[in-house]
Length: 302
Image 1 (cartoon, rainbow, N blue to C red):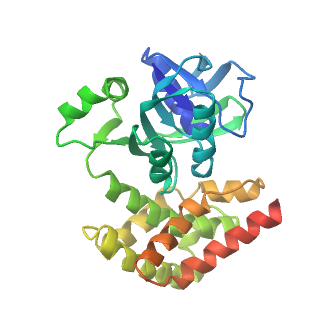
Image 2: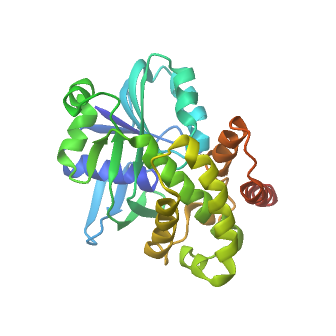
Image 3: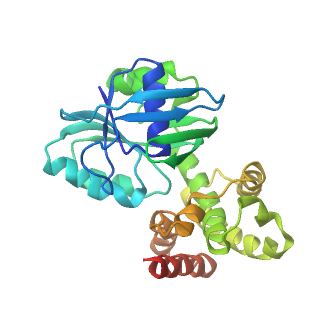
């Protein structure tokens, strides 16, 4: 049995894959939602406009294979709730699937015997309303392979491997840290800027932002040289602008959070970059300024 923690856009995408591939799954709500499922049906519209009505079963047994799709700042509270309710096994297999970095250490401290795997996705979806999700983009789901080969990984995590086996866009990934750092660098540029200015990603191509993005990238290069030296400065810059172009008509998640007076994941995006910089005794004034602006907007919205 696969347990999905959180049933927002990405959690619903996982639920949809389980449903169409006949994988047994159940759902645990995010800390901000009721402990009980108020709506036991998920309406999901896939990229081809095909509509699905998916029954959601609330978890009624101890989770041994858990995919965590709640916001990064919700992870600690959610895991603590499961522990208090005795709804998670001490040696559970846990996949962390959210924006930002830094939650793995939190979960490992709470569950030292658990197998905590990092993951990332480039799928795109949004919730029109509660339990009504529309898929807007097909991407990849990459889950950390902590072993020397895939065979060992698939044998150790058979339930998670079952999902990967039937989902053509899902895979085990040996170099997940490099992928996550690259995604963090992208998010550290796009998310705060689009949240502060409240516009779509593509507007960052305007000339007025060229110098600011250049300065933000220059600070990122200082960190990347230490945490993932295989990534060249040119590759990071190219990837940032590629994402700006490919998602030109999209709003970033942080943009939507600020627009809807919600807490953002800034502490696990820019905040994690700044924490790493402090450990390396590197000063990042441009990223620090953006971080403070987002924190101010969060406070103003509360």
